Length: 265
Ligand code: FPP
Image (cartoon, rainbow, N blue to C red; front, side, top):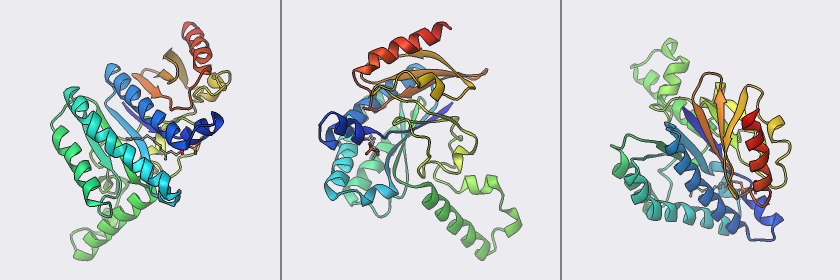
């Protein structure tokens, strides 16, 4: 089972509380930690989080620096724990143009955990689906030009094999914690058949949660304030975790009750 999470809504959550955006992002990292813990408990194989998109560079410089700082701190502080929990860390996205210290950190995180056999935590950093596809096309074009590949051999499978995620199965479900239903350049190719679970993580939006979920999903189990965890069942498939972002707040308790009721239905 592969779950992808677009961890947005942090800025809006912070603004609604009169807090700096950075506080919202910090809470996003907290939510990520909880999502990882639950994913391990639920035996989820792959969890991909969108931590920084290629478009995020256009945000104010301070916010970009804050987001990069949070990623560095997450790796420095949490890598040992992740390693102890048998988590394999993978980074997808364009790495060549990143600052040397950041590149080193990302490479180390992958290297140290590469033999782990538990949850695969994929951090999409400086990632954009279109950019990933364009790079794949460049590699394929180079092979055709070199004569090692014929144009007629270009199939969807071949394209998949040239993506950053070449050795990772396609996501089964995509969750966007702000509740919006847009991919925003996240796993564009890979999400072709993914369920889109619109999970409104609290913020007073608990009531429409069930309606927001795709009809093919059934809410099975849930969790806690301020971060909301949702376990979904997909027909005969295994359960899935959703880690809500910092958007969750006081209304989380209400949401918990709503969802707990749903479990019993
Ligand atoms: C954009 O929406 C979301 C992001 C830039 C990602 C934020 C992700 C985290 C803070 C988690 C970081 C992960 C790691 C691995 C350290 P937004 O949150 O700015 O919200 P908005 O749409 O309300 O402005």
